[in-house]
Amino acid sequence: MNYNVLYNSGELLKRVKNAYSRLGACDLCPHECRVNRIKGETGICRSGLKPKIASANLHKGEEPPISGTKGSGTIFLSGCTLKCAFCQNFPISQMGNGQELTTAALAKKMLQLQKRGAHNINFVTPTHFMPQILAALWLAIPQGFNLPLVWNTSGFEQVDAIKLLDGVVDIYLPDMKYADDEIARELSGAQGYRAANRAAIAEMLRQVGHLQVDENSIATKGVIIRHLVLPNGKSGSSDTIHWIAENIGMETHIALMSQYFPAGRGAHTAGIDRPLQHNEYDEAVAALEEAGLDNGWVQELDEERSAI
Image 1: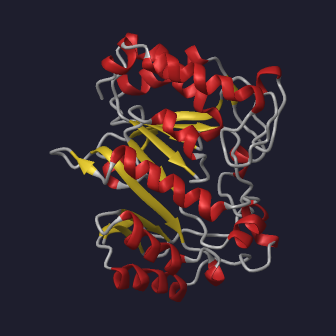
Image 2: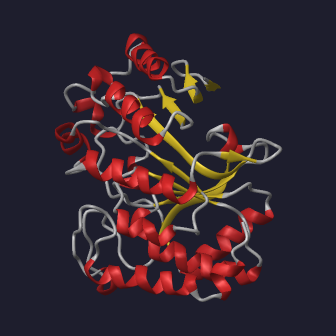
């Protein structure tokens, strides 16, 4: 990624300042908590001014164009804008496990992963730390940082906020979790998820287009949509898949995930208190085929991804 124009023109610094200004009455996500995070107040994500991360390491378990042969430089941010009852990373996302650090230290983590050969820097659940990530990028560029950025998100995004990432993020890796707002509210505390998610996906596509890869099949730009199939039709898979085909395009790459198990509060939540069954995942695969979406990856239960 060539960040020179963005950096040298002053546009990136302008974005950093714009993003930080939103922390005074935080509206980075659709919850619009309006707390003053600059003064240490916290909202639903329970995050303050400093970035907080749980880990920064090479990761080879993402989609093949993301992990490649050397691994994705994955940085797990602590906290989350959602409260998914079944979150497999709930100690990080909901209990806040992790370490606070400065934006300079975050920039150093990015540079270290680049030095270790990462194909990209992959920010996981980054939405609530957008200003801090932009600031870290601004600090890292003059030190030689040049890797593509992956925005690995729940998809519960504010369109006018992610417009600050236009020309900054190369690869969007959003979830499309739900097609039904009441289920989204019940399972993830996400009021209005469907509309916010779909508007955000459309904006991501506008910014980076469909997936592009280099001569080694490593992602350089584009959108990959993730959809986790939930028990009892809670994810609304057929609705979501057909919406993608009709609104995002037949070229869309989709990772149709089968690894649901009742983590966190899921074991005690009616309707999702058991593992996914084979026939439930098969129905989602059938919807994918019916919609004519041929790009992406499907899974066998408890197995690795295979191309569609």
